[in-house]
Image 1 (cartoon, rainbow over the protein chains, first blue to last red):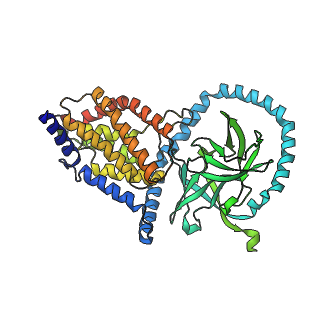
Image 2 (cartoon, rainbow over the protein chains, first blue to last red):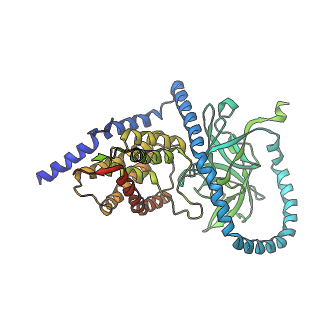
Length: 283
Length: 170
């Protein structure tokens, strides 16, 4: 019994404390180093932030270069896959064409309604804002965390909290800014909570990322009569973003109201970062 | 343990190191949009296999660095992945000291609690200390898929190991 306990402690000591023949560090020393690094995250000093920013810039650029081969191979696989799916896609297209013909009249009606809604929430204001167009540098499609890295940082005037748009649609906000790069927390991330307004009812709610292609609608008013297909915009509550940026449509899934985004968040390439200044206000 | 001296086997001995840093640094992620339940963490397999089978190939210092790079790319607090990778290495090293006759099936069985504990450490550090929400169902599915993938990758690494190492002294 004593021997087996000895074996256990020897194995633990050997695994964590011994450096090994070709190892330069012991496991325990490196775990302590990791804990120190983690505790440094809580410290917010200028020099430390500068070092962090420089290291991150270097690693983001390296990641972009390292990813070039795999990114160039991916379209080839997609092309091959497309050839195999031609007939299937033809059948889908045929049935969709039928549906589209039926929807033609409905679209005309929706266009009129959309113009009306845009006027109501002053949607045109989006296009009067200063924006910076940036490229998505790295998009590590993590199954747990949803964010992308942009190729512009505070040297181009980007700041934390600025809204990020894919075309006219809201896709996220900047959460980290380095000198040459910045990180966007996408609206489908679990940590993303955005105040929204649902039109035409005018309900205020919080859009909470669900980790996939949809977001959850939370804090809806009691006894609400939310309709499927209603449009969701940023509300501008709390002064975080300006109001009226389109996000998506309401859908009912498993008795819960979700938002289906207008933009495909897995296909972001060029995005617009809106600065808080309005062109009109400057003039 | 003796290493082959020729150029090709020396070149092959860098493969685990290159895979580790390529996966940590690049956008490559083994998650599939159409099969959301199917996502692997190949880094965990690479670390566990090589620390267990041949610690001379993959140093702890490099594992630590790969964790830091991965944290920066994903946008996590710097050090989280390093700790999880090192805990996994600890499990592998501990098993290596206790095992007399290694086999892929035995390694696979040990891999199950190792990765479960490692991912729990990862989840709790993010949730408790940094208040970062992590989709634990996706994490659990990722853990399950990684466990299932281990023997397949293990067989491939066994071939690689035979090219690098000529003979083992127990």
